[in-house]
Image (tube, rainbow, N blue to C red; front, top):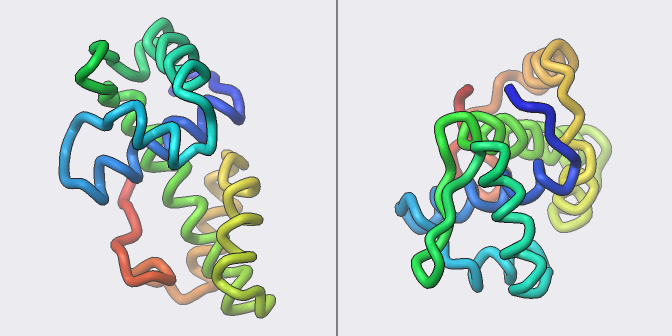
Length: 137
């Protein structure tokens, strides 16, 4: 997998999450901007950077989609986030909203041994806290 920054990871996770929610391969940049909490111009700049790394494909006025490698990173980061949300909520008693915010920062930790151990410790949950599927790598 490509070396990505925390910001790039957050974009890849957001694109993946939106494609799953909308059951579509392409995400509108306005939807991505709302998910990330960034301006449309910032989103376009980041999408272009992701395109240069062959992680995303952008077509003006049509949106952005993930390449195979971009999807792999997005799935991994989203999965990590959900597992951290579970841990924070179920084991440390953070409410779901707090857990989601903190887990978003923790999700970019790419230590598969840690995430795997955490997942096992939690009893291998099959659903996210909100009832969605936990993506499989």
